[in-house]
Image 1 (cartoon, rainbow, N blue to C red):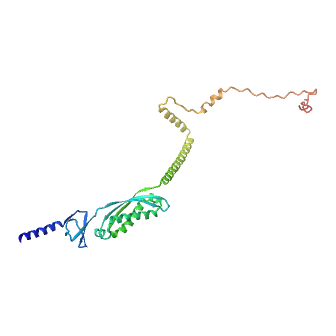
Image 2 (image 1 turned 180 degrees about the vertical axis):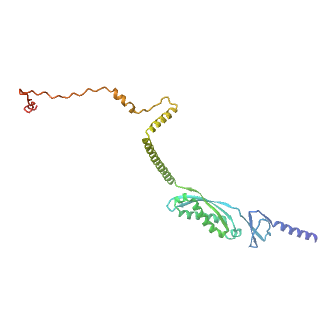
Amino acid sequence: MGQIILMGIGVVVLYLFSGLRVLREYERGVYFLLGRSWGARGPGLIFLPPVLAKMQKVSLRVMAMDIPPQDVITRDNISIKVNAVLYMRVKDPVKAVIGVENYLYATSQLAQTTLRSVLGETEMDELLMSREKINAILKNIIDARAEDWGIEVSAVEVKDVDLPPEMKRAMARQAEAERERRAKVINAEGELQAAEKLAQAAHIIGKEPAAIQLRYLQTVNEIASENNSTTIFPIPIDLFRGFMERLAPAQPPQATETPRALPERASGERLPAPTNKGKAKA
């Protein structure tokens, strides 16, 4: 009789020890007893009656879910491939187990369909320039729909946008043209500012004649400071104009015709000058 009691006690102890479970700090166990949910247990040491109860572990840590590349046609009819990453965590373990069959698969499919629908209503330029705005829209939509499953979406980030080759070439030409336009505008603004400064300098030098001589000496000093074997001194030609006029040969005066003396009459009156009216033309 005593042996039977010891055996019974041993079976009970073994039964109790076989039902002990240890859950980590980030784990929760959804407890089912005879098919009914008794909530979530953990963390730490819990007792799970063998045969009568079952438990499903759920992790509460943030999980990064990769959304595979999706073929999307934007609102301006451009075909692109876009992939993203979803950051989520289980907020309510009971809903994550009871509300949906596989919350990871369901959240992944929801993220893919939402990504395609949102980007289908967006133009390509807006997708490239307003990435943060699109991420916020995706996050809000997925979080609102996954709330019934006990899922909390912390962030959705669009990772890569794969453009067609012809679109990449067109964007490269557009960027190059924009750079050339900016360079021309900057060059024109520089020329305008330089012209204004030169006009001001000419106005100041015109008021002070000695300023041109100081500028001349400064230029000569800059030329002499360089290690050149030849130094050029620009000299105004006006300094030599007086010497050139003195050394120029004197030109002989031009001969002028003197009127011929008219023959005088005996009475002292001059005879009229002969004319060529009677001569025949050659």
